Length: 105
Image (cartoon, rainbow, N blue to C red):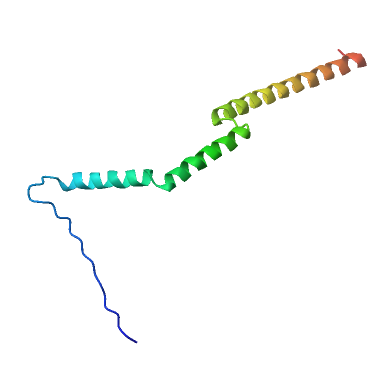
């Protein structure tokens, strides 16, 4: 078994002596350049296309917002409570009718 040589790379950031760029500013500039590069990459186009496609699909599905859903849930609760109260009222009226028909006051 032959041994392979190990190659090590070392990079140093060297600023010319007359350049007064603080390291933080250099890193910020580097980050900005990388962000710009990513924004111009095909990945950004793919992301925009996927978002547009999903937006169209959701519009076709006739979805509602969470706020609209919560409003409908609240309205349904109130309708159910009102229906239960009306059912109780009908039951009481039926009992009164039965008593009146049987001749008992």
